[in-house]
Image 1 (cartoon, one colour):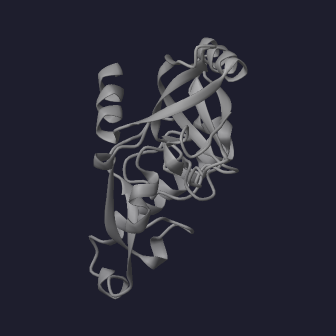
Image 2 (cartoon, rainbow, N blue to C red; image 1 turned 135 degrees about the vertical axis):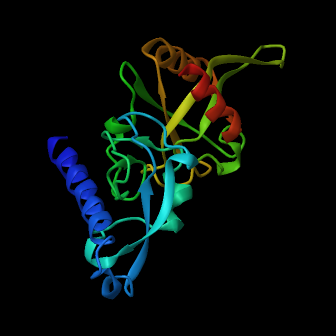
Length: 218
């Protein structure tokens, strides 16, 4: 974690150096070789979900661009992910700074304090036809069948963050695969009990609703 924090500092300093150089008369030559680069518009605390208004794409001279820095094509991948470390304003976004992006697949970094990861096997019906992605928000339900043939649904977790699907965080959930969610220890026990008693099914929560709820929680 110390090494990653040091890398963030280097990235921020690099961007700061570009800001200083851009004010000099010698910047003309460098401006002829710019590259679109994804940067943080505000400071993002470790563990916080990244929102669209915290990112922007700026043109940075390649000489000052961090190795592996992400560009505009990566915005959708980064939004909704969790900052693995404190990310300062102006820092270039590189793999590893946001859990869930390419190269940032350390699962423990995607878990908030006091949370646990639990995996659930899914099929086409219970896994929203394979449309669940890492960092989506889902409602978790227990599905039990009675001897009479009736089926009962019980919500065991109103909101859960998906931290991994399939074999890695950046993959799309597939039928017959697995979805790993971050929940409290009590919710983890409830999900396990639901698995043993019957089946567990997911309902996908709209991104706008999930982000509004995140803001309300502070």
